Image (cartoon, rainbow, N blue to C red; front, side, top):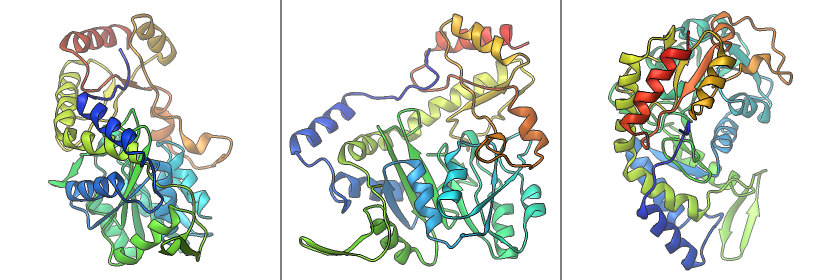
Length: 358
């Protein structure tokens, strides 16, 4: 059983064929299927604007570039994929790692508050595993200390916070679309905007995602600032349009599996059940992780580790003391959770997890 597996059918196949035979596969200007996907995803999240890119990492890099964080501090959790921290470095910022809440593993607003200094410019919360962060408390800190908020929603396509889709809250919200993600693409990402400067930001992002090209008229153009080759291609966008149509349905299937896991798994700790969570990941803790993974793999069940703590990696080598993060990352594993799992698959995963997790 795969840890992740995208839900695809003839609709994705037909969409790919149409793009293939159109001979229009990519454009830095972001027209065609890319523009169609942007508009549909904007409406889905109820964001003001949406700009597509070629990865979640690109989304974070460009979103942070909208604000001047050079030599300034950005507060983030260590429990995330390394792209979250790298995006700060790309933009000349200083990552300040803080601890997470022990139940949800999302960034702890109390730890954020304790870490704010005169050099703090931004908070970068992660909706870990698709579980929504405490946005009200984080937004309150933004107002109190005049900070920016950029959300890492790489796990949270389709997740909600207080009946509003993730993507409609912070200054900018960054999504990742990858074969393992809830909304699958070969590669892709998006930035949704809800800032008072959204119009200018939109033009800035469109230029930066295509090498800084601006003022294009026919074959002529100008470059006013540095940019990157970050635009989304037509194949990814075409698949994304079909995936978006079924996102709520496939997320509902994930929630059904999560509900069973929540009720039937007898483990030390597990992600809470919450209808607002998108359940990109279902994490638990086990006593002997290496042995657990070995036993599950022997039974053809793929297990993941999400994640190793960023602040402990050689590149960052942070002296931050994060007791919850450091404890949980010694024992955390991820179980298969995707719409292609059968009831028999789920029964087997639950039975063997309970057997080998002690």
